[in-house]
Amino acid sequence: MNRDTICVQGGYTPGNGEPRQIPIIQSTTFKYNTSEDMGKLFDLEADGYFYSRLQNPTCDAVARKIAALEGGTAAMLTSSGQAANFFALFNICQCGDHIVSSSTIYGGTFNLISVTMAKMGVEVTFVESTCSEEELNAAFRPNTKAVFGETIANPALTVLDIEKFAKAAHAHGVPLIMDNTFPTPVNCQPIKWGADIVTHSTTKYMDGHGACIGGAIVDSGNFDWMAHADKFPGLCTPDESYHGITYAERFGKEGAFITKATAQLMRDFGCCQSPQSAFILNLGLESLHVRMARHCANALAVAQFLEKHPKVAYVDYCGLESSPYHALAQKYMPNGSCGVVSFGLAGGREAASTFMKSLRLAAIETHVADARTCCLNPASSTHRQMNDEQLKAAGVPAELVRMSCGLEASEDLIADIAQALDKV
Ligand SMILES: *Cc1c(COP(=O)(O)O)cnc(C)c1O
Image (tube, rainbow, N blue to C red):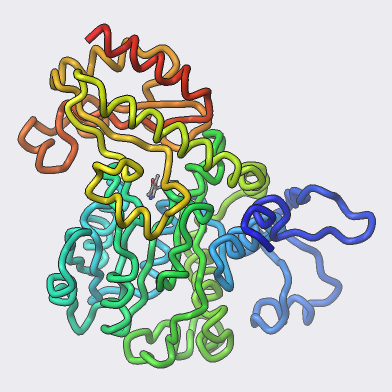
């Protein structure tokens, strides 16, 4: 099926007389006739449901759609994007292990890796997303277990050279995990370019209406865990907490990663998505391909307008030819990137503040990728504890405004921005 068709119909095929829309199975548990029947599920010998913390039919149908969209073999939903990235990393890293990560990643993920996972004994080396192959290769250690990056980083909007990072990861016998939240599989499928695991904050474009927090993990089915069995004992040796199952043997390359993440991490941490949220997420997925095109068209129109405006010092948008990431974006996302544009007001912090409060359509919010246009001045909100020097070093100077272009008419968005710039 074409990706557009998967957005609409993937993951769920009703039988004769069954509901057309994915049913919301709002049930914590499932009934069995004999204890033996249920025992087979616990032993992972039969497929089926017993408790919605582990698996639920509504969530599974939506996960199947996301797996198909990314071109993967298996997927799971999580309660948030944070949970998805934590599970993806912790499924193969433990105390004493090491991660190589791009430094331009979402702030929440940066904290997760550099502070919280550090407390668990997992170390990290951050590399610039634009680093050379030599710098990248030099970041690996014998105990490195994964490479992490974002296709388009939030909020820095850098574009990662997926093939370069995949090549380095594979040369060192470890998988590349890509957070593909901003482009979505409509604009980029990282698996095609060598990524092994793909994660999402479905809270963003996939939901697209600011309705539900959620996350997803997709396995490409390509990484050969058994070929690097010494590095991944969790997948390649018996799991004593799960009846001595060896995931990579029993479920193969296609299923081992997601089965282990479900059977161990979801069992123990319980960051599951509710069936209600999965249903709402699926409504968003049904129009994802239509919405992404409009988000991108609006962002490009806004970026082009801003670039010519005398009160705007610079514009970061990889769809602009002036962007240092234009060539990479053309390679990995020829049909469009995302709806988020960053720009700096020539008048500095004060100008940014006047501009923001003069906007009528664009709301000030800590959110992106919504149907409604929203914007944020990191210096006065998410990064307000930093001084001007620190802001600059973090890549979010005081005059920076991040605008997430929604689905409104681009003329209205531009007229709103123009009147707000007039007030500056
Ligand atoms: C928002 C976001 C996250 C975190 O997702 P939540 O759903 O808010 O937990 C992770 N990665 C990226 C790229 C994001 O934009």
